[in-house]
Amino acid sequence: MKKILLILTLCTGLLQISCSEDSVTDSNSTNVPTNNSVDVYVAGQKDNQACYWKNNQPVLLESGGITAPIANKITVVNNDVYVLGMGAGTTTLEVFPMFWKNGVLTNLKTSLSTADEEVMTITDFEVVGSDVYFVGYTKRRIITFEDYSLAYWKNGVKTVVRDYGAYVQNYPKIKAVNNTVYIAASSTGALTLNGYYTNNVFTEIPFATITGLAKNNNEVYAYGTANFGGYYKNITTGTETTFPAVAAISSMYFESNNLYLTDVASIYKNGVMFDAGQPQLGGIMDFKILNNNTYKVTQVGIDSYISYLTVNGVEAAQIPDSQGTFLSLFVVQN
Image (tube, rainbow, N blue to C red):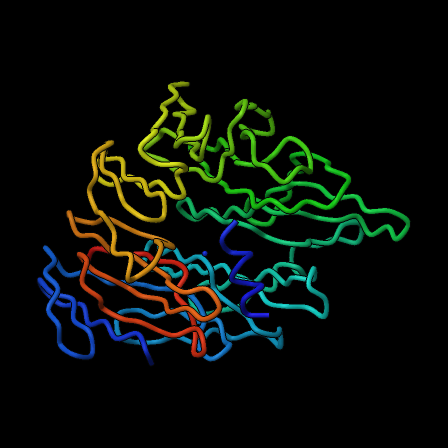
């Protein structure tokens, strides 16, 4: 079941990081240069429990009795730690979306479901100031046929984006800027993500697969693949960019107005190779750039895999899948 949950996230005492002035160290005291003091957060799973690590301290997250919980996204805003995760039900399709703020659990299936509609999954979240946004799918409580809807919630208030009808298997992403809500998702229940919504208005990107959203100040970008190469669109200006150096863009990130993107293997900065990657450490699950320092969570292996955390290309931690996994990363400047 743990591997099933890991696949869902792709569609986020073994970690030993000590963050101090000008260095990040692992348990073997390997010095990794950084510019300033930072806090490094990594979310995932440890010993079949949802967990995140802050520097060298693991924080096990309560499960509320849900089986095999895993944390797949972590964000820190105004010193509050937000974590999205999920746990398993009695069938392979039954998922319990879970959310923690400063370690306090909310079962999103319980808190966001209504008498008429049940929350099936929450695929992403966004924190803007004190506002918390979720996006995911609901299902009408009708036993004669399946009726699914794409929806988002702002501080618990639901907005239906589109009624799909059939079961949906894609994984929408959400961003919010100036009270405008952007969602990368499909226009139907098809598997391929082929556009985005702006306040419920769908914009198709022909022959493209949109896998995520990124924002830079007040501008929002959709990214993924189109015409057999990397692709991204500045939704705010309408500018489209193809990036044939990669087959697909799996993640995009802005820092100090610099655009960083990855195709899992490497990282590019403003269109130029920035980090060639390390095949022996596997593919990039998540990455952050802060003060010209590169933080990455990677995984390598097929039947059995190892997760790594690296800082500026130097291994800072690892965990085998028999004991846990790393999925998401967040770095905070002190």
